[in-house]
Length: 219
Image 1 (tube, rainbow, N blue to C red):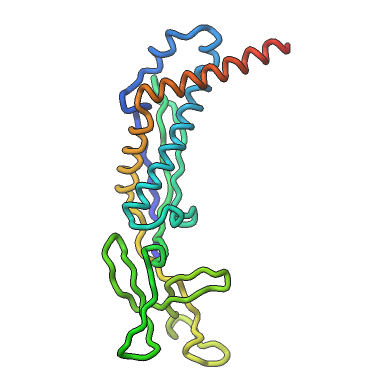
Image 2: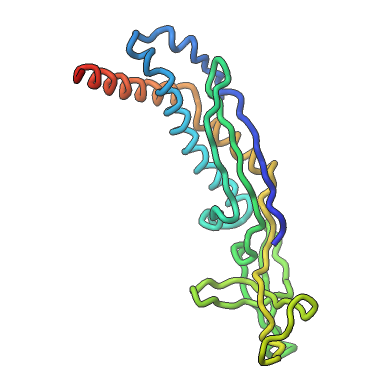
């Protein structure tokens, strides 16, 4: 498998409409101001989680694979909030490794000209190609594309049979960093429209204000 690529980028505006949190805070009462930072962080995290889901769906579609193929061992997208005065911003980081060839609509082939000789076909990034790999089913039930390691890197097995060289899984390509950033920005902007953001923020302010008052009443 190829090397992992690491990415990190920051979306500098809290919302696609540049909502100014300082102006929003001016209209709050004293209790609401106390819980305001917590409510903002919770709001950004809630919306960020939805943006992450939307971005993953778009990336899976763009790569021509099912969303479940973007398992953490192959693709990680980790969002986190950071403070950028006067607004709250989002930092995205993660890793992208080549995805197994099988997730690109892979299927095993048998060539009619040579009985028993196998091949493999997969549509990587929308273009179907044939490969000199073979399809195999593991004990776990996983079906994938594999190839055998050559004698130059591994010795023969105890039986000495050619067919018993160790097998390795075949991989396709990883998700390009540029594609990740573009998908995240589109998902983030769609999820943080001002009306939607303000509504979610006010809901969290009300929640934390209520919890604050309950704690004060028990003292």
